[in-house]
Image (cartoon, rainbow, N blue to C red; front, top):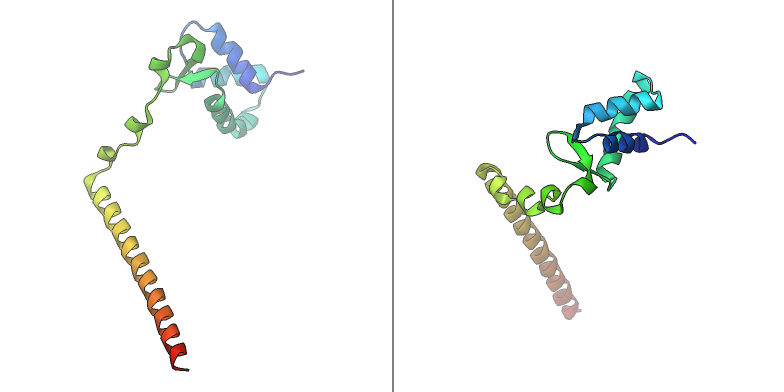
Length: 129
């Protein structure tokens, strides 16, 4: 049975003694799998995604990869609070976003009050009949 692309990558990274750029991994995988340039072009995106999802690999920044087992949690863990921080949003964008949210809330409040007004009119008309 032929090896999967990700298994070729695992073999290559395992044999390396240091982190490996993705381009070198992909070149090795293409060669071992016998992929044409055309086939490689259609598979590279899915292959990259598979590496991201495969728990055996870890990206170390600057598109360099290694085996997760060779690194401590502290070195490879990304705190999502550091990634998604409101301080990173330019103040103009933040102000626009807050204004948009406020306008949406005002609109929803208007819609709710119009519905309750209409319900009040309907009930008062039925009182006259």
